[in-house]
Length: 261
Image (cartoon, rainbow, N blue to C red; front, side, top):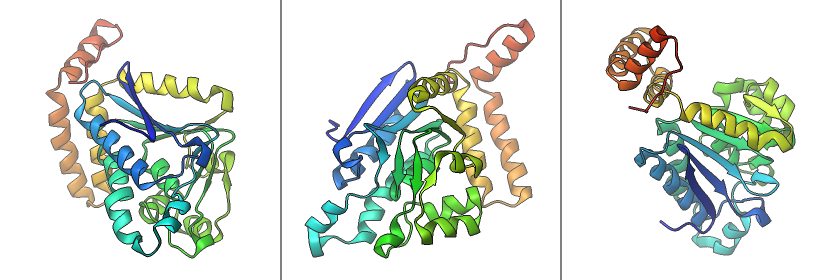
């Protein structure tokens, strides 16, 4: 698929998806939503991709939904089908992708963009980054998985506060609340994200994916079910080449050379 509204690049085991409508702070149009969902699907199918980075071009991550497109479509625009056919695909593709996903938050992430950030596994932010749930400003409800994702990270009281006040949360406060893993100076963001991406792409990617699967499933499991599922996944991991290489490297006191299988 040829992309017009995002950039897609694969190098050194890392796929980088860049939201690329900088003149509109990378606001999502229907076309860009489709391209982003497709890019994550492509990452899942490409064995050469062992880690994914999503970021925005210019000074923002994404302003969320392009309201100009909504207004232009008038009565033919229906939010429910738009969410189900679009943003839901992105969120489920990120959460279901059994490869690490890094959100490189270079500026503001608003609305559905916060859902994309929180669906990602590792969130590295510029000190110029911020998060804002802007839905209540136009009489809407948080979407794109936010009602599921956000309370699990910061608790319901703080999540509800952000939803109803639509107040902007700065990078340092977001870090303190656990929404970001790291905050770095803006001019160091690209280098720091690259360090993370190379580290994850060079790791035992099958075990990374199985760990993600186990943690996602554990939300809906009892302790007994989670323990049983861990044992099942551990059996799976123990039969990988990466496990054999890791054990051999440990015993031989050398750095492991993982191949992601």
